[in-house]
Image (tube, rainbow, N blue to C red; front, top):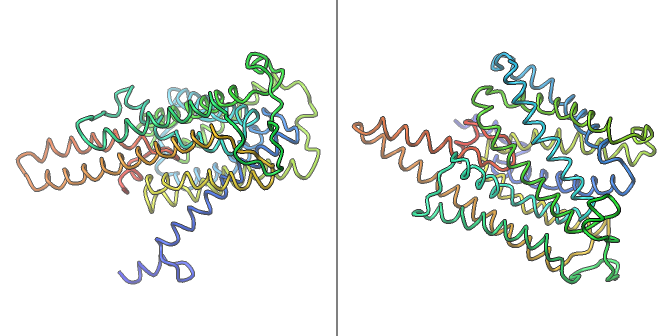
Length: 389
């Protein structure tokens, strides 16, 4: 027992401390991705070329691990599964990343990160609408999840519809950071518009949540998470290449013009899609999905500091109010999920102690766990990670 505990120590640091350090490092890594992506757009990197290179790097990182680590667990690939992977890529890679870059180009890294905090609540809403997750308004956890979802929707609406006065401007200039054009003109590609950018970011969150929900049935048929992610990434690259062939006619857009452009793409591919993915899997395995999700707002704070220092980003009243509502909603949903899983655990113990009703109790617990597992907000859910909290 002592040897097992010591084995989990790194440089004398207990595992619990390792988890907190890893999660802080993870949030800094993802925060850097928001800022680096905005820098890439400011340098003129194509919004179609950037995700192609990013996902190619991620694919080369994922494939070796998926091939060797899941060699015995990976089922045979069928045409039906390939179609599922194609649509997962369409939702989780192409639409997700495409909407994100369009939204980021029209808004700012801080508010892009703030809106992402609504993903767990949106995922719960989708799961409830599809009857994958039950809504129990007669329980505290059910009320908390519903209120959290409504708070996230309200926060996203405030950010989208109300920009408000400038609260903080590093340069001391009260002029808007973006040279805005009317909404319809921005839709036509004639300039940038804050409201349109927020609409794109909401589309990004909807795509991300849809991707999480759609993975639940796929992972039941193909329980090899790294392989699913690799196939999804592969089809995502193909889809972006097809779109770029029609809409990116400038051959020069595929050429790197400076070391800074190379750095932004390598950071997005290696750090945001490679190292961060591995750290996140380890943290979820050791600490559980709720533990990981609780740290999400730290990313927004780090992004705000980084963007202010590197990009001179301004903060507006509407964005601050909206971010506060979204983060409040996030924690309400997470608290509701934690309470639900605690209740399920107690029911499992009661069912085990009652032999006459153990069969029905086990079925109810198993069903509740399956329903609750899909709302994991950061990674594809699975039975191995959903039981850790």
